[in-house]
Image (cartoon, rainbow, N blue to C red; front, side, top):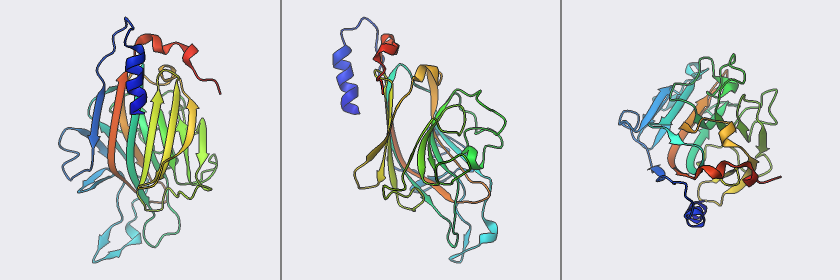
Amino acid sequence: MIFLVLLSIFLHQASSSPVNQPLSFSFSSFSQLSCSSGSLICTGAVTPYNGYLSLTSDPFQSNSSYYSATLPLNEVGRVLYKQPVIAWPAMISTTFTIRISRYPNTTDSADGMTFVFAPDSNPSPPNSYGSSLGIFSRSQGGNVSQLAVELDTYKNEFDMDGNHIGIDTTSVLSSFAASLNSTGIDLKSGRPIKVQIDYDGWTKMLYVSVGYHGYPLQRFIEKPIIMSETVPSSVYVGFTAATGAISESHHLLDWTFTTFPLPSYSLKKQNLVKH
């Protein structure tokens, strides 16, 4: 993706339209100060630890024993970068590592995480726990201009299964979803999983690739998205996670992000790749 960004610079540098400087940031790890250092906005159930951010509560542990009676239910956590970034016209690339784990001595878990392009830096909406994944309240309907890539670990009545990735815009009913069941990747395996999301502002294509840390990424989503019709030109980027009547832990281990603004003529729809 970085190659595509650089290629775009050279191919279009003759344009009379100005191209602003890119914005890039990287968190190779996290610490107990990550939510108070000013770089991140942490709300809800987020807790920083040395090595990762926990977006929902880890299981309570005392004397090496876990107590199921204290499982935290109906939790929501949200982590956003401190300042807005340009969503369009732009080339965007982000890579991050997550770890989703079932609680000890449990047979099921829920509900998952998202990477979100949010219209503001507010906390997750009220009552956005469970299947709403911290991005929509149950009363919002389709009135929010945002884009989320969901990593869904629970099969609700509207889901294909409990191990899929999807694209959400106006509701948690994904406009596109891909199951991971036949790939050998289990989102709630407790293993670090790397995710790469790329958006090509020239072709209006969104790409999502996933793989276990240390293994090659597999591309599962290639979806046309007209970003200018989906989110504001300036957005906050980050993560949400939620539990419902069942719990699991949601860890963010690292995160890099780059957005490279493009000239305004890149918004023309004739650049859209047809599928």
